[in-house]
Length: 232
Image 1 (cartoon, rainbow, N blue to C red):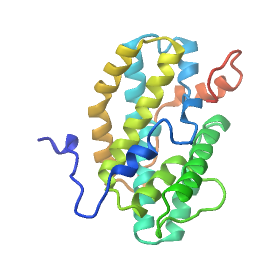
Image 2: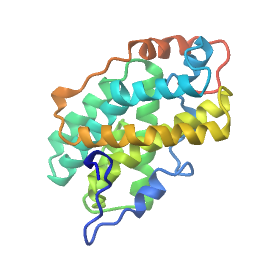
Image 3: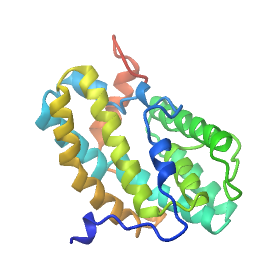
Image 4: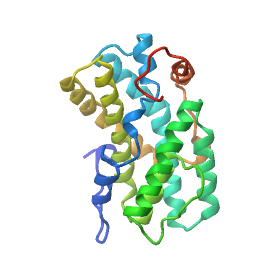
């Protein structure tokens, strides 16, 4: 099988069940309230059907926040594994600073803080740091996965696919696609998710960067959009 699409089996003692809870829509992070500029993309006509949604999401995963989130998650994971608080702080500060707008800063910091608080309360682990202040969402996921010995490759794939599902759910509510089309979009993005997850494991913090300039500008326009369902 292609290594890029191979899910690594957990080793003895490792448990992947927490991922099902953490990335469930019922986990109290408020992911349903955010569209990561997709609402503006629909308003502007960039996303108007299944094909344009797929193109938008592939760009976001490979050229934008999806790739960056995976990279940052990986470094947060390794920092917790190494019990390196300084490295963890650096990764978190970088992750927050990468937010191109106030709305996207709120999206990652609110979800990250909510996730970490809920996980410390319900899924405590000796190695899970209780970071004070704002926490970026991918950093919080990486911290929890490392503390619970959830394999990094599986965490990356599950996290990225969760982002895709959240955005597809937003697209269905915004009405450019229906539920069946949404399922097809998720299936189409599965290979992209696996490839980005595979690549992210070997990237350094110097590899952070993106090329989704229109989407970033869209997040500013969304702040002034006349009608809005989402907070970003």
